[in-house]
Length: 215
Ligand SMILES: Nc1ncnc2c1ncn2[C@@H]1O[C@H](COP(=O)(O)OP(=O)(O)OP(=O)(O)O)[C@@H](O)[C@H]1O
Ligand SMILES: O=P(O)(O)OC[C@H]1O[C@H](OP(=O)(O)OP(=O)(O)O)[C@H](O)[C@@H]1O
Image (cartoon, rainbow, N blue to C red; front, top):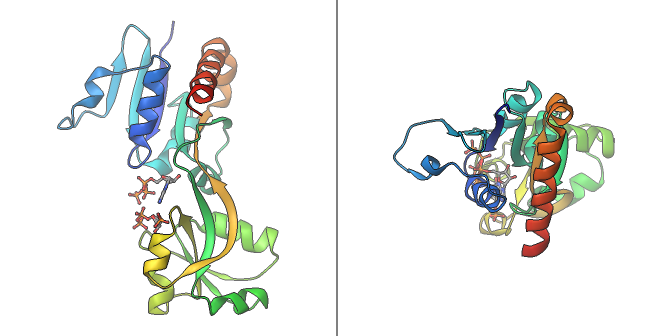
């Protein structure tokens, strides 16, 4: 039997991802050592390998087949636009992709004015404004603390993740439009889905059962 390789997004989603894999019987003991600098873990018995990678890179590993399976946020899947199968919504890491800004920007949006949009997600923003709204905007790519942009005059609005809404509130901003709901998803390499059909389908079925039980 060949090894099934998992690429998991590190950061916010990692703990829950490992928790849910553990519930379907996939574990790598040594992953729990917080001081370790080791990047990939092997479970010889289960014939699996698990590695944690930067979220944005997870779809890349999966498209190229360096990982058979990935777990990553829907936002990253949409932004990266890689060729892969999205097989299951894991139901955690829930949040929304939104257009946000000061209340005063509502009018600019409604009138379809040429506004500047700051975001960590330029592809999602482009798709939303160009393809869905047919509105021309200037997209400005940032790498974090996106809420700063309208405050300091870099942009009129932002496209960003909203979970509790407290970052927006504490900075005098609000949700102006909702783009889509987000959560963690499992993705599968297109060739692996065929070659390892049995094991992967069993994994999906087991995950569905765990999710149904914890609902
Ligand atoms: N409040 C939230 N803010 C950001 N991401 C969230 C939130 N809630 C759930 N998520 C999910 O968690 C993922 C982000 O995880 P994390 O914050 O660790 O990465 P990141 O901030 O994108 O990475 P980096 O540290 O490289 O900027 C998102 O892709 C999204 O799917
Ligand atoms: O609605 P809330 O619960 O306030 O969560 C949303 C905030 O959390 C994320 O930022 P993160 O902490 O990842 O920092 P960053 O923007 O610097 O990446 C996101 O980009 C928002 O700023």
